[in-house]
Length: 65
Image 1 (cartoon, rainbow, N blue to C red):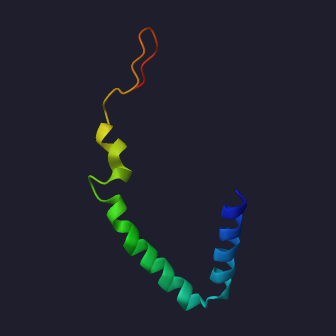
Image 2: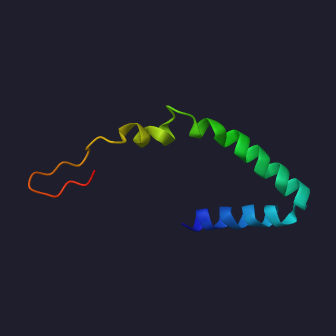
């Protein structure tokens, strides 16, 4: 946990040292990089493929669909 906290602090320090224009460029690059994660068939959308299917079927329990 200490390592994660230290890494987060370093990222915050770097982010605060950037100009607004540099921050906007970083956000644009991050958004472009993330596009593949949201395409159909990606691992991020794997549960979307289950839409409408019962995946938690317990006998005698109320099923919500």
